[in-house]
Each structure stands twice: as C-alpha cells, then as structure tokens.
Image 1 (cartoon, rainbow, N blue to C red):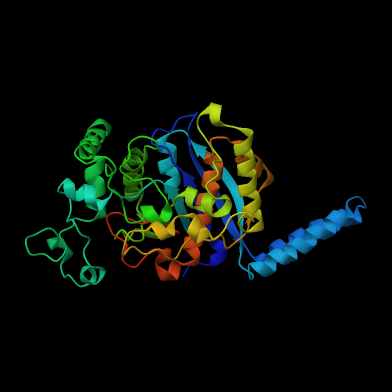
Image 2 (cartoon, rainbow, N blue to C red):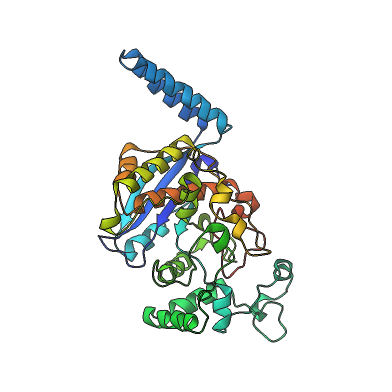
Length: 372
C-alpha cells in the first residue's frame, strides 16, 4: 500500500530527437492536503490585509480559497515542485530509474494500431477477449496453432519495433498508407476517438510514431509498471500514456495555445496559455467551455468503444511562481504540456484501485490514453 502523501506525480513532454533546442521536459508534483492549501492562501490573504494596502483584495482571495475547497470536496491539491529538461536520451533514461513511489503520464503513444500490426502479420486482427486472456492457460503457448491468444504481447512487439531502424519504419508506415484509399490512409487505435488524438502511426505532423519508437522501448527496459499492457514492472514506478491536448480541450476548448513555429507564437496563444494556467489554479474549466467530456470528442468513439470515464479537472493545481512563468513564456507549449500530463497522472492515481481509469477491455497491444 502506497502512502498517498508520499506519491510523486510526473508529467513528460517527449520528443523523438532530444537536443538543447527541443528537449524532453518533465514536471514533478506532490499532493498537498486541501486543508493545508486553504490555510496557506488564507494566511497570505490575512498578511496582505494586515499590511494595510489591498485589504479588500486579500479578503476576496480568502473567500475564493474557501469556495475552491468546497467545490473540490477536500481533494488534495496538485503542488508543482519541479520542471526539468533532458537534451539527451541518456539523461531521460537515468531519470526513469528514479526510485518510487511515482506515477507518470508520458506524452507519446505506447502502442501502434492493431489494424496496422495485423497487416504486418505481427498479431491477430482482433484483440482476445479479456476473460479469455485471464483463463487461457499457459501464456508461453501464445501464437501456437490452436492457442487461445495468438498475440505475442506488448513487450515482444515493442522490442521487435525497436529493432527496426527509423528509415525502415517510415517506409513500412508509408507503404501501408499508400495501399489504402483517400480518407482511410491511417489505422486508428480505439483510444483515438475519445481522446481526440492523432493516429499513433503518423510519422509526420506530428511524428508520434517516431516518438513511440524511441519512448516505448525505454519504458520497457526501465522496468516500470505499465497498466493495461500486460507488463507488471516495478509497482512503485507506474507509467501511463498521456495526451495533454485532452486536458487543454477540456479547459479552453480547441483554441490553439502553442507552436514550434516562431511565426505562429502569437500573443493570442500566450493568452490561451494564461487561461489554461488560470483554469488549473481554479480547478475548473473556463466558463466558456461546456462539458469536458463533449470537448474531447467522446461522442465520436467507434461503436463498442468505451467513452467513459472521460477526463474532467477534479483538483486545483498550485504553481511554483517560476514554473508558472516558464509555462506562460514557453511558446512551444512543452513546459505547459508536461504540467498537463501531471494532471492526467493525478487523474489516474485517484483511480488506481479501478485499473487506473483504463477500460477493462483495453487492447493490450494498443494501450489507452489515461483520461480518455
């Protein structure tokens, strides 16, 4: 049993080619009891009032803290404590071995679409029934004629994928698309529709397949626990697939808030980042945004795909002032995306007793985005 006060929440904005100009960014947080947060805010407000100037504003801040505490029913506050960057894979790999307990959400896909893998002859066309997987007997017979589960497993496929060089992988992905009709070029995972995420086989705009190719094998070799994928690693180090866009859309809708293109790093996008930060601090979506579940496209899920639970912001976030400013100033969005992944890690942590919030029938080769 993990002491909730000891858990660390991690969020990772990933890149397939880390360097100084585009590093892997990792945010770290702890859970602070709501009572402590409210007391701290009230204390700060009281100090401001005692100083004379701004007494009215201080009183308002105290009332706002009381309102926030009531609306979140005493849930712990997510207190951001670190924001670090790795411009080499070696630094990231070392960080993955940080002793737990921690739960992290990582912004890259953990698996390729089953339709693509089946086309390559790497797995069956359909995922085995979850009940059958639990009762299929000797797992070493997987893939044999007549065996209950013909899939080799996520770990085997991840190592097989890692053995393919990047140019050869892109060639395979391109060939798959070239053979398919316009409008249906890409295979999708079941999690894509409810999450609103790009197909994990895309190699450009964004190159998420290359991120998978670099990220997933490193998680496997780090020995972390991977819920939903049949990989029972270190239970004190838990890795979940995250997608910061899911959180951003729940908070401000589909308004753009970042870009790697300097020409598109506009004041409007800075303002959008400010609104995301304000929503995180308040623990609530912007007033102009409707149901979070609707904003992430849950209704567009394929027939039979689970659309609940859908992410909703449940806990306020307390920013260190320097981290807050960095998230606002970083026009690429990498810093803020790492923080949004922390929020997803917290969402999964609260559901750890219920499969980390993942559907019971998650495809063990494709994986699932936490919160989708």
